[in-house]
Image (tube, rainbow, N blue to C red):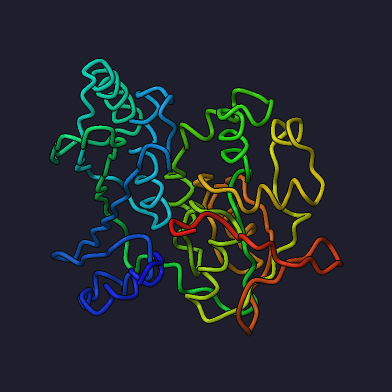
Length: 314
């Protein structure tokens, strides 16, 4: 049992409560007195989710934002956070982290409710875990509800964070805005709340568009076809890396976008306009009977890359 997938599978027999959703979603949904509580927990680890040289204020932002992104994908309103923090023996770094934490909490109007601190092992990297708690209207959307004939939609632009990481590592030249997209993702809370009642399935893109769309398709018992030519790229990303097939494959397999990924009928745009809300959404594919991820570039079939996105055991 070495892979993340295998480990999670081994935990499913322990997660029998309906609130756990079979560990097949990004959040638990606990019904308490007629209220749907949405709970999610994400950790970020130095050298995996952030670089040792990243500003501590940005690390604080990311630790909070990635958890709020999971709430956004359930259409949830944040109530508060619990945090686990490893002290790294650098008081100035810790102080800057706390200052950044205060700013992100204020920006998203979310409360810090408690948590725990530990001392990191000598020479070990920092690890920060956050549990986010929110409320949502029932039924709370999951990643498993896509239907044959649904379109696959994404919010915002794809691949910016992956390019930002490459710039931060010195492997690419490009706009500082791309680095911001890597270090300071923006959870789509307002868009998630508006989309949740209209989506058949929804999740955020944390590990890459292709791998996360594949997870949604698998959870829904369907196949998903994605058209590379439709993937929305920012002007900054195009300036840094172009917009050809290779660049689009890079964008589609990069992680840390934290945009929303949803399955909804082709009439989604019309339904949103009727509600007076038009978040930036792009249709990038379609769900049909079958299984797996099918990749196209307009009318041309494209072989799947060896790596569909980020996996902890790869």
